[in-house]
Image 1 (tube, rainbow, N blue to C red):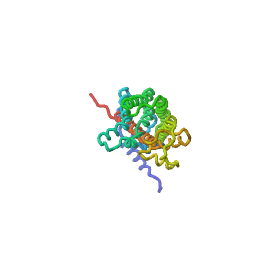
Image 2 (cartoon, helix red, strand yellow):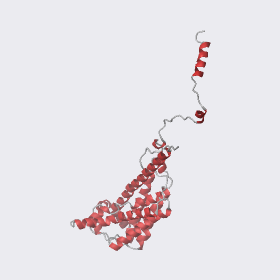
Image 3 (cartoon, rainbow, N blue to C red):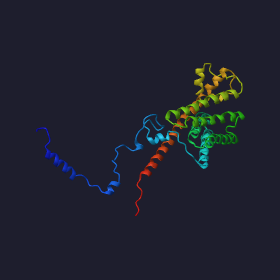
Image 4 (cartoon, rainbow, N blue to C red):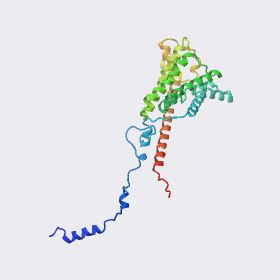
Length: 308
């Protein structure tokens, strides 16, 4: 009948399938055959969700690095970090004097105005608290940097320690920055978490240090050339010679507000430096973690050498 397959065609089709079937040996049966996967490797697949400090399209390796991993370092490496941060602390004091020695026409105090608080110290405190596995190393880092650098600045006469109040206020302040990094960036280190922690550390510095300056400064009236309105005082604070004519602040609300306004250029530099250096530190650490994961996985996938 039309539309139905003939019986001999079905018979010859079955025989042809049997004749063309592949012959497998016992050795072939013992070896599992896997189909090649067309999926990209794990390290090259993007993951959705929050991004790491390297960008929004984070890979699996980057996500592992941004998930809160910590690193253990030896005391030699830790001491190298301390020495590098001490140099960064001394640089705003030493560089203007070197420039003034080479070019006497340049006032080193004016040059120091632009360099003060441009420092990676705040970001280093946050980074050490978040990344270092040893809590002892994380909290000893800011203490060692400040104790040694303050001793050197006092010995050289560049910036003598103003007293015990400096130790009792600013030292715990930088320990708190390390604590913020250790607490808030312990499990996850996304871009916004890193920048938020650095911003909180910078604002904490702004509030505490300026309040300390107002409280412990001499109780004297403002100079006659100080503008009357707060807006004009803010503009005046950004002139290089503004801080040279101040001998103190009155212990009033007006004096406190003026102290915050006059210290705003220095505080903004510290906040900006903490944000910039913090992003660089964590981005570099994420990149290093990514490279380490890729190289480790690449070494595990290489075939072993055949020996007879």
